[in-house]
Length: 173
Image 1 (cartoon, rainbow, N blue to C red):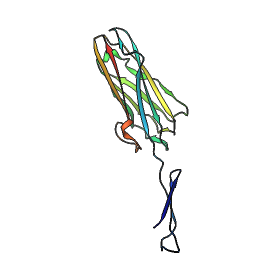
Image 2: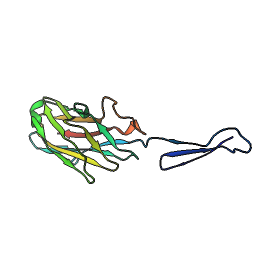
Image 3: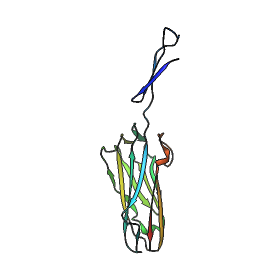
């Protein structure tokens, strides 16, 4: 039987040529990414109607390999709760973490839809991230329960698909 060792994403299989007719081979396995998404608010749990708070969404790659979205692919999506008048319509500024992502990420809010789309090839190196922050001004009471998703179309193969969403709830009293 062969002996297998794995180090830094490379699996080496060694056959005992004295007792086995196999050949020594090396298989290079791709290091996979792990996209994560967190969504937080600065409301402290609740606010009054007409008051504002911010939601911040952070997308990160905590896996062992880089991520690449091709131009036009959706990187992140978020169906916003409540009424479209609660949100600033249009472009949302993207802030890169360290190390920075490369390429152009276009984020915008249209109605109740927040999307971030790759404007060019977008690469998230290992341990990189980007975030967006936007103001919310609800005018009616109720809970604003909101979940955002990174890689909503499943374009990226990852080690863990269960951490691709982030949820935040703000009560409007």
